[in-house]
Image 1 (cartoon, rainbow, N blue to C red):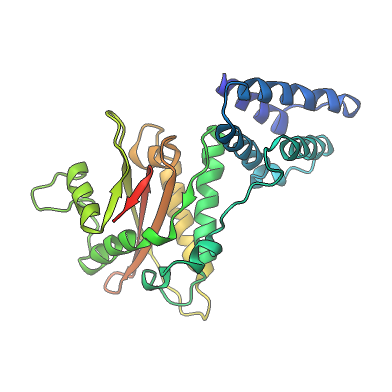
Image 2: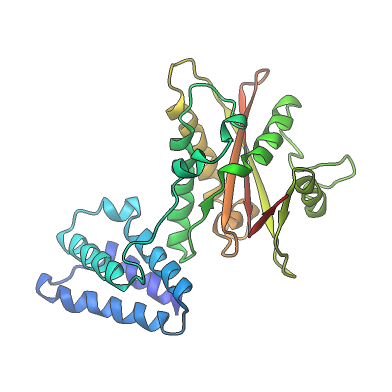
Length: 278
């Protein structure tokens, strides 16, 4: 049923022309479907569901659509979302707000980078793809960048372009238990592990990176986009793509390090369910 709703939303945004005079009726059809979905939800799930709808309406591909009927539909649905919230405007913790209480500057060592923009850009690409799959958005966890940066530093220092996930010489390419023990060594623990579901995932990308400008933010984002596109263009059952859209993952954090011998920048991405920090 959820897939059907998504298809209808996409069709309305990109494929169907409506009679403007009938728009209030058309919007009400969407509202009726959304409210039907929310009938059995508790307050917290309703808020998350409304956040998901709002994220779809706020996706760059939707905002770029200049059709009058699309803009009207988006405006009306946003108005309905605001009126449907238990609290009129849900408080959202931004990356910058998290950074105020975080020692993240100890973790990111690349020079001349606006890491707030880097984080927010990387997160927005993920959540736009997740929204297209009707999956709740990820939250960024600045305080855990220490683990991603630690791994990126190891890869860069050892020029590791193969077996990038192996923690021990005896490991095969991706040994889940070895990586979990490695997280424990970083004082990062996961609240629960459900049989058949991973509590975390690790993705690694690397590309040539050069920048000598006073502001290297866009240069790094350009490299990140190549890495993200390579993940997003995989088959849907491949590991990197699945990590991006995994419904039970709620947190993500990233780390970077440069190998001066190869000019590769290594990017490590960690995804996880609920986390208990040691």
